[in-house]
Amino acid sequence: MNKLLTQSGMETSALTFGAMQFGAGSDAHASRVIYHMCRDAGINHFDTANGYTNGQSEQILGGCIRQERDDIFVATKVGYTGGAAPENLEHQFDISRQRLGMDVVDLLYLHRFDPETPLEATLDWFQNQIALGRIRYVGLSNFAAWQIVQAQFLISEMGGRIDAVQPMYNLVKRQAEVEILPACRAFDIATFTYSPLGAGLLSGKYTQGFAADGRLATDTRYAKRYGLASMHETAQNITKIARDFQIHSATLAIAWVLRSAFKPSPIISARTTDQLRPCLDAIDLELPQDVWDHIAAVVPTPPPATDRLEEA
Ligand SMILES: NC(=O)c1ccc[n+]([C@@H]2O[C@H](COP(=O)([O-])OP(=O)(O)OC[C@H]3O[C@@H](n4cnc5c(N)ncnc54)[C@H](OP(=O)(O)O)[C@@H]3O)[C@@H](O)[C@H]2O)c1
Image 1 (cartoon, rainbow, N blue to C red):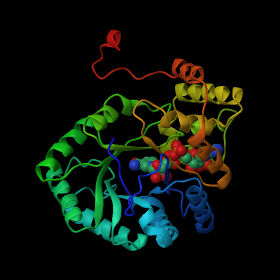
Image 2: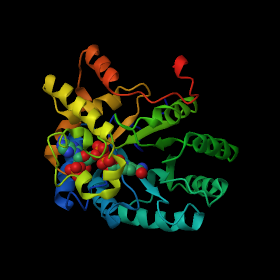
Image 3: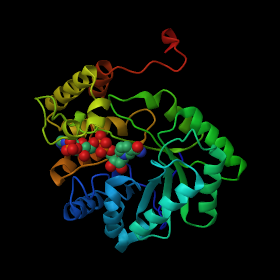
Image 4: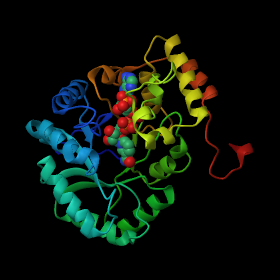
């Protein structure tokens, strides 16, 4: 698998931490405490985006990293709003680097596919950022598999490559394993998957009723994304299995991503240190094989890309 390195030459950690809550769910002080707790657990890869928390996320994260810049792998994203035309990306990336306080960002993602902009123009801009030394790796987020392959083909003709892809992936959102993750494996692209807890659903806190301050209660976009009754049923099953083994449901759900077939690096996130602790426990979790077999039996596997179910 494609190994991405920090500027000091270290491989990125098994878990990535996503700073999407920095400056919102976690104030600046709480964010710094969370950052150091991640560092103590061995995490050296931190993810943010130009669009998070009005720039607070990049600003706070940049401040945390300053003292140890070369040992940290920083990823940010541009192009969630305004499209993927070079002018917009240039404008947003200038702002991101200023907020982060960094001339060089390790990994820059295009946050989502833009059907209005020719992919060649976008990738040419990314290649130019590599040539200028402003980024070290090129990433794509929220792309379909065919779009990733097309991008890899186009950028390779420019002498470059897609280094990383960031899709959604968790026990109730497994679409990525049908085509995206196999495509990444085939093209040796690193995968950093987001929302390992289904935005908190798989932490178990919604199984007893409604967690009033949780994201699924406060953010209608996420409530819709995780609104299916079958998803809540799966969360209940996972919570029960976790309880039987006296572990936190969040630990089990993140560990499942870590040991899933394509071995992505889950991008975890938490608003508080109490939330973060069980997420970090996933790093060392070891359970007998029959637990994983039991999970496989109760969590539906998505149908294969070919639709030939009898051959799956
Ligand atoms: N590329 C993209 O489009 C994209 C999209 C989304 C995320 N991301 C990246 O991926 C990262 C992680 O995404 P995510 O936040 O959706 O991940 P997640 O792990 O699915 O959800 C994290 C959320 O679950 C809740 N939680 C976590 N631990 C908990 C615990 N022990 N007990 C109870 N609740 C707990 C918290 O939310 P509440 O307390 O509010 O419920 C926390 O913010 C983000 O920070 C960002 O960097 C990328």
